[in-house]
Length: 152
Image 1: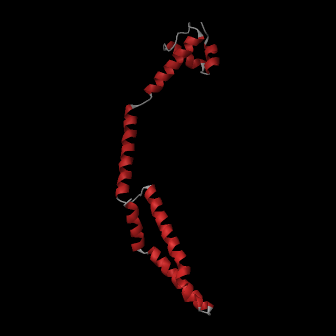
Image 2: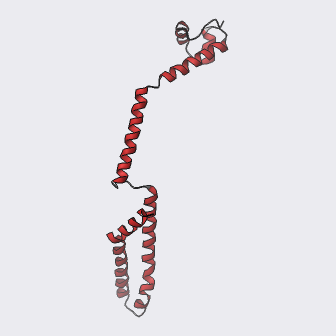
Image 3: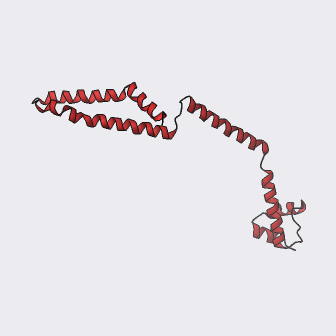
């Protein structure tokens, strides 16, 4: 036979709770400590399983399914884009920018070689850079990249 105090010291459960559980038939106080602890663990496990509410779980599942459908609709309506497509889009856009800007020196080298006026050189460079930026921001350029990425 084991006392409520011994059980409480071992499990950390208040003696008043143990007394209630004993009266409710959760364990037999006349058993040894090991048997009592097993009974308490079994009781707590069963009580925890009863805590799973079917309605709550069904509601949680319905919400998850609704969230999934909403994400799929957002993808379909182009409110969202898949991450791999965004990365592909940016990769192509940056590659296009790099190529366009790196082409400026070879395009202007001969044209600027004979100009002695720094303000004229500056103006020619500015025009070429703005032209490249205008091309890169054009809808035709962006749509071309988008269609290429979506086609992959």
